[in-house]
Amino acid sequence: MLTGLAAAFTGAARSATQGWRTQRPFTMIGRVYEPITRLALTAAALLTGAGINGAFWALAIAAWSASLLAARALYLRLRTVPRAVPVYGIRALFSFSMVSWVSSLASTGLIWADTLILAALATNRDVGVYNVSTRLVTMAVFVMAPINAAFGPSIAHLHHTGDTQGLSSSYKAATGWIVRLSLPAFVLLMVFPQDLLGLFGNEFRTAAMVTSVLAVGQLVNAATGPCGTLLNMSGKVAVNMADNVGVLALNVGLNLWLIPQFGILGAGIAWSLSLACVNVLRVLQVRKLLGVLPFSTDTVKGLVAGFLTLAAAIGVRSVIGSANARVVIGVCAALIVYFGVTAALRISSEDRALLSAVVGRGRQAA
Image 1 (cartoon, rainbow, N blue to C red):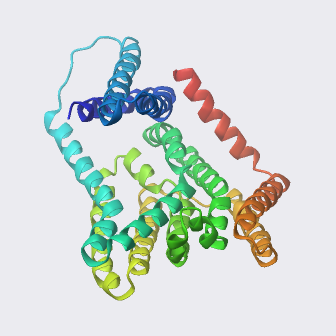
Image 2 (tube, helix red, strand yellow):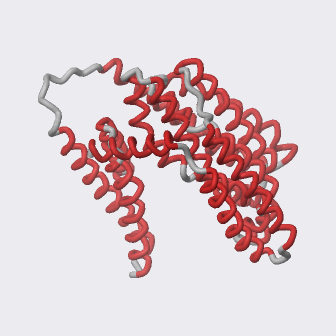
Image 3 (tube, rainbow, N blue to C red):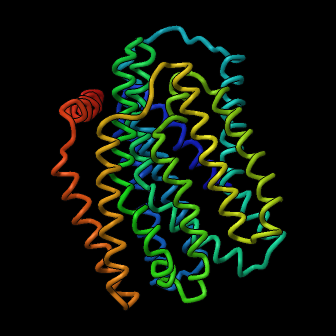
């Protein structure tokens, strides 16, 4: 419980520092220091024979030390703000907090709904295999969290200053970077699902089709960019909450319908379809409410590089017989082809300038 309290305070303090349009405390404390410290202390506890109790102490130390660092980071920035009479908008604060809480709760429900329903309607083995498949696919979009976090403060600033052109450029640039950095992983998941799952054990190879289906849903998620972040940062939290609640209801209904007929494949279809629907809806909402779209020529260049990489990976799969060799050679071939084509097509000068501006604003604020 105390560890959870520390984590909640750390999250609030880290998020508050983003108001100065800097990502340094948010990233360095939450994405670097805390997980590395937790891992190192847990490993040390287990190696010294401290066992489970030592591991729990490692979690507590990492959480509370991170909260102290977050408090210090926020305090240093608050010192730069001129003193003023505080104004407490209790009603507005609780209204915003409740909407955000319901939205986060629904978003968490979407992550766990398929697993919980599988546990009730299928076997333990199905749940285990499905969880490995979902974790493998989630790794393909690991770039979304840091890119969304990096562009979030910039998006909020551009919206509230009325810079629609800058907002459009930021949205397109963020989407372009997400697509370009995640496409190689999607290609590998679609071409070598059995071989990748086989790394966890032969029994997991049965989830190859599920992995491919889940990858399609996450590919739509990546291609639509940080549309949810854009809604939140522009003050449309109620719209985002409605989206999250609606997609959770859709996901639960699809799972209850498809899992009895298709098992883990039904769960994969339900999750992928729900993810695709909510992200397409958010793109339309962002277009209507803010007048911007996520698509640009750089996104198209990334897709072109992805198709050529897909062809190369399929060629490797058809030639190489050994599963382990297919994975190693396939990864190498995919990376060489993808980044080679990306370098040949080049990114736009606008994209480079925007990225430099975002980094520059972050350094200046820090």
